[in-house]
Every structure is written in C-alpha cells, then in structure tokens.
Image 1 (cartoon, helix red, strand yellow):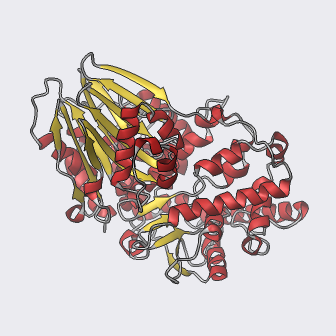
Image 2 (tube, rainbow, N blue to C red):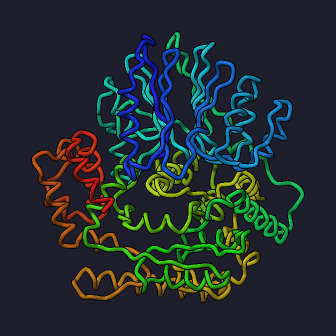
Image 3 (cartoon, rainbow, N blue to C red):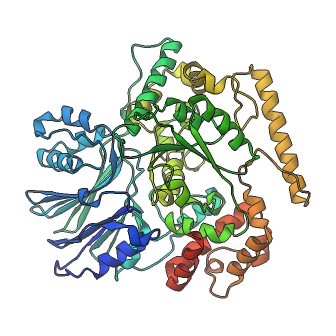
Length: 583
C-alpha cells in the first residue's frame, strides 16, 4: 500500500463492487481505519480502483479527458521541466511536483498526441500508471524507468487482472494460486525473485521502463520498452577528474533538492546508518526552509557502530537524531507483517521486525533513503555491462539493478504505509552522468569515495565507515589494515556468540543469526515447519531438523516461503499472524 488495482471483465457486464472492495482490503494491512480510497470505476468492461494511506490525497490519482482515463501511483519530481519540454500540449506546470492532477493530464495529453514514450523517457520519479482508452478499447500499463513502483498482472481465461501488490489478485474469483517453481529455485539460490517472475505461476511484474498494451477486443498483449540505459552515450566535454567530482556533487545536491522541494507542509527526514550512502544524502540535503532541523532516524542497539557514527554525522548539520533499538524477543512474529507487505519477495533475514513505525512517522512525512549508493556510484554499474546490471550476470546471478528493484524497493512497501520514501541516488541526470563516465574513470572504482571526500570532506575525512571501522580518507595500506582488523574482530565475536559467550559485536546493528536462534523465535520456527498444514515439504527437500540446522540463511528462506504461502492460502492464519506485526 498504496496501490492500483483492477481487472477487465470479459463480457463487460460486471459492475459489482465486491471484487474491487476485496482487492482494496488486501492492500490495506496497516491503519485500515484511516486509509483512503477513491470511488471505484466501472466502464467499458474495465473495473479499477486506488487506495492510499491516510497522509495522501486520494482524489488526485484518477483523471479523465475525452474518454481517456488515467490512474496514477507514485511521484514525478521534474514536472516543470516536463511542462516546458512539452509546451505544445498546452498543459500548465503545477506548483506541486508530485501527486498533482497535472501528472495525469500530461500523461493523457502525451498519449493523445502520440508522444507518450518521449514523455516517459524524460519523467524523473518512481511511478506506475494505467491508461484506459475507452474509444479504442485499449489499456496501457506503465512503469518508471527504474521499475521502482511495481505493477503486477496476469491473464486468465481472457481476463486481465492487475495490482500494485500480488496479494490483491487473490480477490478475483478466477485467480488460482500455483507456485512458480523457477521462482522457488531462484529464491533458494539467491535469496530473491528474479526477472519478471513472482511466487505465483502466471503472474508477472511489469519490467522497468515498460509500456504494456492490452487490446480488449482481440485480447492481445504487446510490450515495449520506452527507455534503455544503452541509450546513454559517453560523456563529452568535461574530462578533468576534479570537474567530474564537482559535477557529481552538483547533481546529487540537485537531486536531493528536487526530492525535498515543495514539502513545506511535510516534514522531511532521513534514515541514517553508519555507512557512506545515507551520509552522502544527508550531506546533500538542504536545510529546512522554515529554519527547523532535519530529523534523522537510526535503527539499532545504542552501542552499535551505526548509531555512534550517525550521531557524529548529525552533529555537523545540527540535525535531530533519534535511535530505535531492536528487540529480539518476538522478532519472528513481527516479521510476518513485513513478509505480507512485500509479497514474500524480501527474505526473512532482511525483515527487521520494526515495531516503531507509528513513532517514526511522527518525525517526518517524507523519508530520504540512500539505496543505490556505493554499489551503483562506484561499483558494478561503473565497471560492467548495463545489460547485465538490469538482467543477470554471466553466472546467472541477478544484476545490481534487478537486486534494487526486486529486493530493496519492496522493502519500502511497509514503510510507505506510514511515510513517503524518496531515493536521491536514483535521479535521471545523476544516473546518466555516472553511466557516461569515461572508461578510465570507471576502471579505477574509486570515483565514489573520492567524490565524497571532495564534496563533503567534513562528513568523511575523520568519521569512520561502519564497514571498515576507519575513515575512507586513510592511505590505502592503513585503510585495508583497519578494514581487515575490523572484519576479523567481528568474525571472532560472532563465533564466541555462537558458543554462548555473551560478547557484543558493535559492527552489527542487528544480528539475524542471533535473532533466529533465540529461544522464542526458534520455537515458532520449529512449530511452523513441523505443522501438519505446512506447505514447504511439498516443494523443498529435507526434514524439519535439516532445515532448522542447515544454517540461518537457508532457514530464513524456507520460513519466508512457508509464511507467505500460508498467508496466501489460509485467511485465518493471515489474520491471526498480521496482528503481531502491528503490536
């Protein structure tokens, strides 16, 4: 949640709200009494709706012009630029760049003018949309260029069903649950779903930068890509490395400014760790225009490195810093809500079982996040084929962009029931600049660190990186020595913990192995796996003991599959377990 949902009725006669109402209910799993929804749409065989958390304005998500209807979910940050580039459409720019009726007007106008793909190619944001042309009897489904606002669809017996989350498809009487075996293999091997597949056979995720057209008369589907990273040409002009650092810093600051602009009525904050990425976003963020302070939130034990480093970072800008510790007792039960919110796509080992979302949502309405930082800014994206980044590597593993779309972004589904999440590293101009960097710069793989030190020295010169335990400004031999020492020390502490010796590893803000081996959590895991209603034995080889003792990684993946399947197939189990996640 929030999300789009709907279906095409084959005979065009079904105007009953019951299916749409159930689809909406499946998406409203947090604060259900304060969520908002538009009136359902029925017309020309199409039935659709939209639901949103309480902090959103719902009446802005559907728009109709001359028989063309648009449903929109998400945000676009460069509305003024788009209005200028498409001035021939005679659409005025909106003073509010996200969630404005102008976005829908512009999408419809671009569609009717035949320039939809060009418009989408320039749109900077994370969104999905549905356009229904009642005259031509067509429906178009659209995703942003990074594929971050998910849209799932399936066709069964000529009926097309779609939703922002897979679970909503359960509401349609023609939909049947069947496990996709390839997805199960991928999940057990890589801890994530891959390509456009889901847990459910026949249900697909619309790819990034895609337009899928469903012709309602012959029941045909056509899919096209309106943008590809292969379109990005090499950088010309600036070749001096200092100029490149300067340009990178300027683009990051502009991205942060776009994602904090026009939010006078909304408090903007950030989730801040001890890493490099969220720190860069924090450094790039402008101070609140009203003279207030940025609210920064760090999750983890007060003694851990993340909290210690984040505290030092916030003092530079004079921000408010709030910490929220984990509680291991009851962790597994609390993760059930996260598994449901992410459609089982996020491995249990990444489900942190956060209890304090209500408290955190009191600190900000818009939360900046550092997803796509180091790995994209200086790692695999700058040294490998872009086609592999969006697909699979030569070894069959998911590429970086697939990981971001299929793991990181779903992790925000629960967060966005409480506040908006924005990701400055995924800005069109910044992304294109990085992709276009000269090969000699990419090959060094040091561009990101040097750009950080050049643009934000006070945040990096003396404050350590959580992963290494030392600042990235140290000479390479000293840095590598510190990194090695920190890593070995952490491994020794984990071994001692495994022997039952009570030592604290400050490097870990949360230890999944410790959490899953906790007496109470272990008992719940064993109960789930040994239950006579358990689903996993029909799909995964082994017995209960082999799964429980096969390592925390495998155990977490099997439990994720089991919990998700039980929730899909057993509404009583679902209703009973979702309560724990909100307690």
